[in-house]
Image: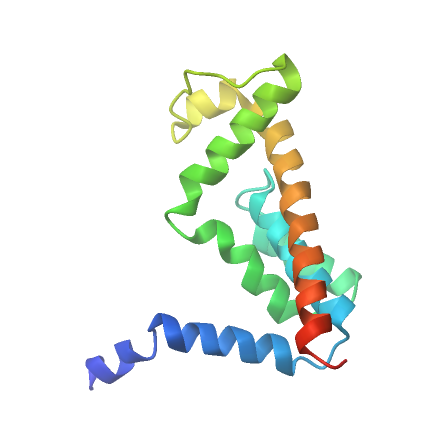
Length: 151
């Protein structure tokens, strides 16, 4: 088997082309496409880690959204460089919401014991961040589709 040819398929330009073609070729309205991607982004930043994919499929079925696009954007939380940023954003947003200030000392959030001790703060902050990210995704994608797509 030619592994080099197989690996060539996973270049960033090929992945980007596939994603853009999936979005523009979808047989849905701009509203449904934007809502599908926004729901996935919302769930990616939500505190429902471990259940995001199941939740994404269930909500896509209930709301009759594009399941492929929801699954595409829910996997944002699986990109390794984003994981610490998602944890930190949720923790700091929760800190600001509960205490009115950001914390200078952030505990090791990759440790389950530490995360459990700070779960309320993390969950509240993650929910706030996920609402913001989902809203920004929806507005941005909807207007980009309105400009560049004719449906």
